[in-house]
Amino acid sequence: MKSINCKGKLLSLDNPIVMGIINATPDSFYKGDLHLNNDEILSFANKMIEDGAAIIDIGGQSTRPGSERISAEEETDRVLPVIETIKKEFPDSIISIDTYHSAVAKAAVNAGASIVNDISAGNMDETMLETVAALHTVYICMHMQGTPASMQNNPVYNNVVLEVVDFFIQKIAQCRGAGIKDVIIDPGFGFGKTITHNFQLLKNLQQFSLLDVPVLAGISRKRTIYKTLGVTAADALNGSTVLHTMALLNGANILRVHDVKEAVEAVTLFNAYKKAP
Image (tube, rainbow, N blue to C red):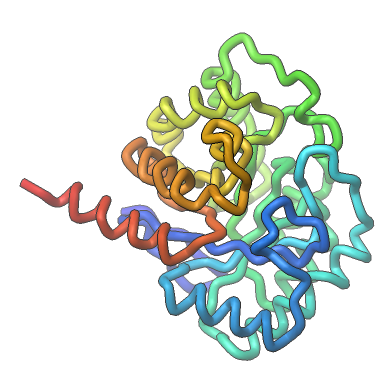
């Protein structure tokens, strides 16, 4: 049985779960995410919870290709009101903070978050791993080649699947060494990868299950989908659902998505398919 301990609340991963995204940023690549006031935050969060999101992932730093970094202080100012608002209204909700700043992670956990989702796997803040260990939270570590500002400048691999697997073998050991008990890995679709790299990772996602930690797939409405289909991110819902289904068939335990209802439906159908004699 797979489960993660979210600050005393056990979350089962025996069946895949869905993480809903709330971006508290003014420049999200997907315009379904807006700069929200308190009422809109609560409405957005409530719909995600009603639609079946097990986790709400809140981010205040744009990580789209070419984005510029903001300070930890500005990021904290963006995310804390969102976390506090949701946690006050929905005290049983499980909140993840999407950050690579240890200071933001600490402030967010103190405000009610119980998962730290770090796109840099500790590589952009050398104190992140020890901070997460001291906070006793779940840690999502993602693979990224380069930084958000430069990651899509001609990413190159000899074998993207083997290189990302090797990265996680080392990173999981570092996390364990730091004292982090619950580790989740994210191959980092779109983070220093070409469209071909992303499809190779998706096709071989089952290999990451051999690392014996939960696997998160974050591919919702990304360039791989809308560029392949010749549409925009706003028109990439159907494509997202197709790739989410592929990720589930290949062993994903968590889907990180913009559209919770459709992702939960994909999980429901996948579970029924899996149980068929």
